[in-house]
Length: 383
Ligand code: COS
Image 1 (cartoon, rainbow, N blue to C red):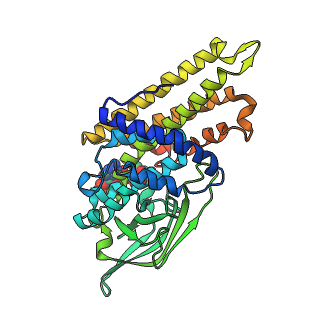
Image 2 (image 1 turned 120 degrees about the vertical axis):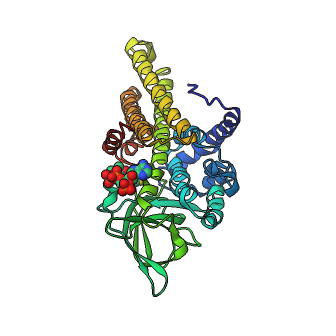
Image 3 (image 1 turned 90 degrees about the vertical axis):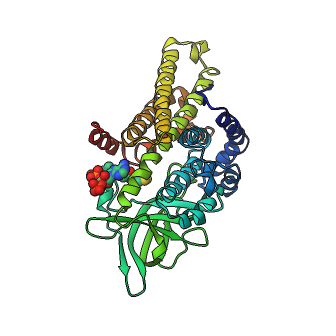
């Protein structure tokens, strides 16, 4: 299926190369690595060389500054081939690079962003805690200023952090007073956040296995003054602005994954015969695909509108949550409806159809469970 293409010529050229890379390199690697949960280090390097991590990083800091629309199209393409690879990419570019670009000092930006843009290092975003997920404001990780040593000390745990096992920089949110939260940069010269006082525990997953998922424990992690990201007490707003953008990218990821299920199912009903004819030659089947197609392109149009508004510098909180809600629910509905057309083949290890469906499930949860999107949209209806 030829899905909606970008209007911009430069983006079309970039997308052609991503598509070629997807077909020739990502697809075979998915088959080889995803089931075992191997981390695709080589592909990450190549994505860096292709400039994919820098799409939303300004040119002066090593990116191309192509923006959110470009990132959404690339997200769709990566997720179509390998959802876990998309997640590695988006955790780096949407979640780690954005808050640094948005709130960092010139020095922080110049030091870290070029390395994130080139894929030389990976970053992660540490907000969620074992007892603070949807209610992000209830976090208990504590950062205390130590006037004697002129350092901050971090204590507490973060959980479900994508990329932490391979990251060299983490954007960590911590409570700096009863009422306020601040953002910090924890850096290490080696991948895996090897910093005194930091322990990273790898948590194996059942879906999107090749992107790592970790608990980060901080026990008296001493950080210099220069580790504070943005103003003290402004961390929650930084976290939320980051999620506004991240949610658009997850929306694009979900649609890419559902388009893949659609295309695979569409191909299968064109070769599988029952009752003496192709499965496709039943009106019910054609109507189901027509319905799925219409829902997918409608959700995609919303993802693009949210992306365009973000690139135009508008307040996107409400539309980003709407895009995340609609795209992830649509993707799950469409893909689970079409999955039945794979018949028994879906349950064998001779196809990846069931894992590709299941990979969609967490999109309804991460970067804000969909009930949280309802809360955000309701709160901003009068904006
Ligand atoms: N952009 C900028 N600032 C924002 C913001 C946004 N999108 N959303 C909230 N803020 C600011 C508010 O303006 C407010 O600032 P002041 O205290 O200065 O007035 C502050 O943040 C608190 O906002 P709010 O009262 O809306 O916070 P709540 O605690 O009610 O809840 C929700 C906010 C539930 C929306 C938030 O906790 C959330 O998004 N939770 C889900 C977290 C999530 O997505 N986790 C996934 C992690 S990544 S896998």
